[in-house]
Image (tube, helix red, strand yellow):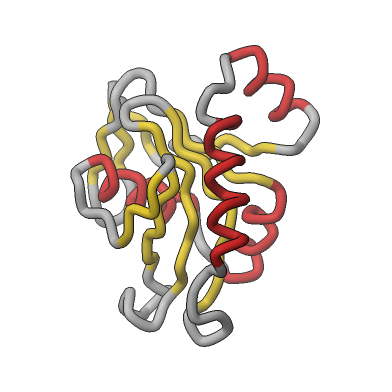
Length: 143
């Protein structure tokens, strides 16, 4: 499926779905991170442009602040399974937090082992309960 946004064209495989958890959605809203920036970050990861592969399906990816560059922007933790799913589960400004701690990384890896194996029914249940929000192509969709 292709999504056309302001500045780029993103292509995701038919099975690729992107979600954000409740905590990340709150962070993104406060940081004014738009879904198009999240889609771009996943597109970069899909193309192998990974800032840090932390293992176990956990990726750290930088996202630029609006009007700024990536180096002074935000860091996001994405649980990622190529061609299938991406879950944004944590975000932070580099100025507010240097990096994630070892215990946080261990928790993200455990979460990845669980969430990356969700089937469609589990995703539907989590979305209906408000635990997850799907990042959709609210921009113009091109078949």
